[in-house]
Image (cartoon, rainbow, N blue to C red; front, top):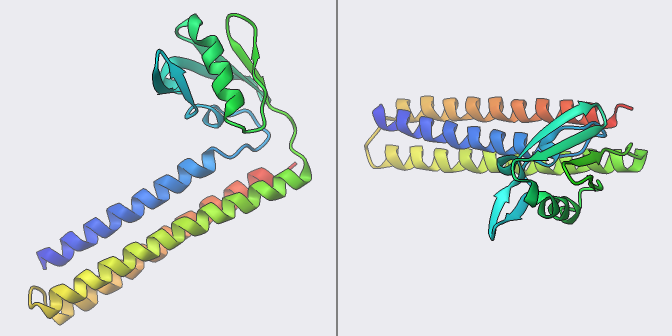
Length: 187
């Protein structure tokens, strides 16, 4: 029984990572509201090292449609401005010499629909990843039973558990997608 429990724990951990990855992907989609997650993972060339923006600056939202980026080192302002422009996320940074203001423009209806499609594609990719984890877990359980390491009953019970894990994780992803679509499409 211990082997099947180990398989279930490994399957659950991998599925959790898929959900976590989707959450990260969806949080980076621009919704027309200022959110630090839009820019925090942008890579900035900082003293010859690729560094995430959140590691070299404070990112705040003083207004619903404005991001303010205050670098810890004022000499990195130019590199930050350049990295945001190069990220190609549809926002234009304004460098005032002390900090960078990033006004978030209103999204067009077509852009909102495109973002909803992107969110849907990202969600489907992670659903497929979860199903692949399920398949691998099921194959491993069947192999363990075939080799006599677990009983048929343990295998059958574990296969049911893997399916429950799969259903639960896909439901979480669907809920995340529905929330993101609502956020993106609401005006």
